[in-house]
Length: 173
Picture 1 (tube, rainbow, N blue to C red):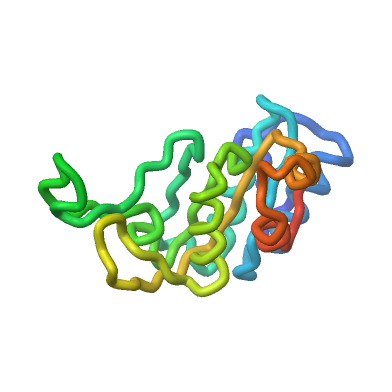
Picture 2 (cartoon, one colour; picture 1 turned 180 degrees about the vertical axis):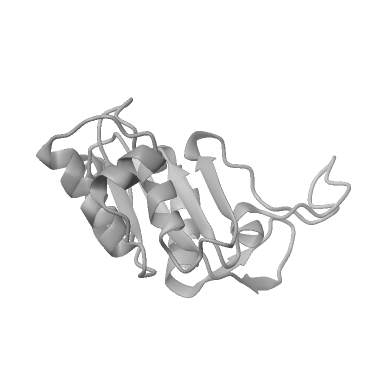
């Protein structure tokens, strides 16, 4: 494993305080596992760098890495599922099979989408829009948010079971 300074240089991280160094340390320690990671922190602190670190040091490093803004997630569809669906389109979990998916701003997901994400995390299964065929995927999920998720859970805006599933390893930036 590279030392801290080499990692900072490789990922263009500027700064040297205990919290930042601890976050990098946690990211490199959790990388070899398949545990879900939830990265929290204010907007603009560089949360998007940590999934790249984790993916780069994981056994999935040669597989697909996709970063998704949860405020604008399209779903995988079957041809004919709706007007304009003229061909099959693979969803993110299908494309990323064997790799890592980074769900940025996961706190913005609507409750209906949260339920589908929970199913993928629990069983590795998903169904395309317009299909009844269950498909399997093997994806490492890393999520990030600037939202106070425990408060969102209390307010009924975020599923508590999904929060606990995503928050297997918390990293605070």
